[in-house]
Amino acid sequence: MPVSSTSPGTVPASIRIVLATHNQHKVDEFQKILGARLPELEIVKYTGPEPVEDGVTFAENALIKARAAAEFTGLPAMADDSGICVDVLNGAPGIFSARWAGHGKGDVANRDLLLDQVADIHDEHRGAAFACHIAVVVPGVFEDVAAGLWRGTLARSASGTNGFGYDPIFVPNGHDVSAAELEPEQKNAISHRALAFENVIPLLRMNVIPN
Image (cartoon, rainbow, N blue to C red; front, side, top):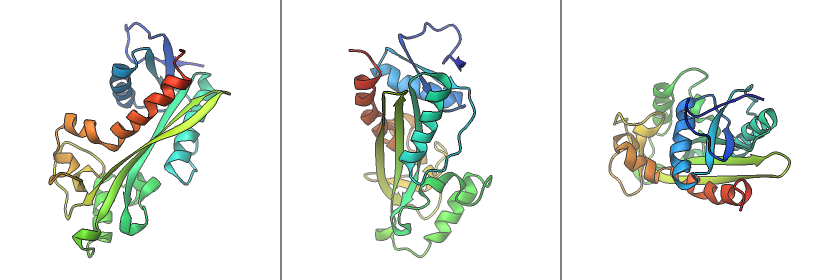
């Protein structure tokens, strides 16, 4: 089945792994981060149909996407699923983070609704975390999920322009500014996705890259 390369004219790496996304920017991000540590890998974009994400956890949805990409292409596959989890809401929005205010409402509506829901909560109880789960599937051989959790608190209002989603209302532990006020390089070094990448690298080394 067809896959598309990370960029025209590049020399393919020795091992190709499909990322279950139609977003080339995400492919480039994965290639930049993983390629620096695992130069054998070439991350390629998924061109097949999107599966129904009917899992009830980040891990389940990541596996659904990775399995679909692996089945369609016959290649090893990865997929990620992420969102924000608020302590006082028992982990919500969680897997519904992208559509918390309703399908198609967008980032601002999602943030505004979440802030309204916790408006009366005192600062000491506004704990939250960004979660990222990355699934790895080798067809007929192996599947597992690596996770990263970035702890912090919810701000009272949005601030910053460097991020997206819930970044403007999330203040990481150890910082007094929102994730959207951090420099991109700083955020990318400490975020939930960065932590998940650290945990997925051993899975790739053991199960995708030949010894």
